[in-house]
Length: 98
Image (cartoon, rainbow, N blue to C red; front, top):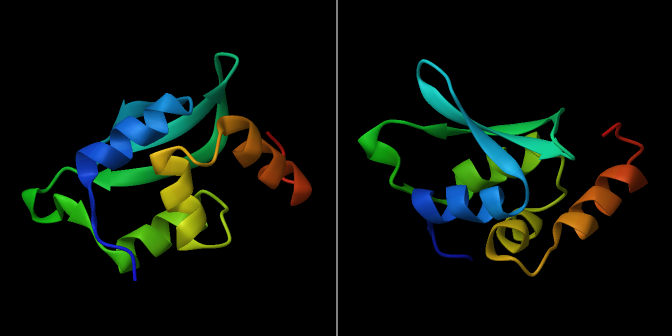
């Protein structure tokens, strides 16, 4: 089972792939932008200090929100084995509109 991932590592990893932080009341939202255009693909990050690390349950929830099939895919997206191009290809294979 993968180890928990630090919140900051999640944010930095997704930002490298074109996600931008959007401030909401209770959460930070990370939304994917492509060529400067907002997409419908996003996930939330808690502002609360209780969630400095994200375990399997929260990672699974984030993966679903980003339309990934597995938590491993999310980890690969965050840690960079999965490129933005590969992520977009995965979304296209599911016939999801970018």
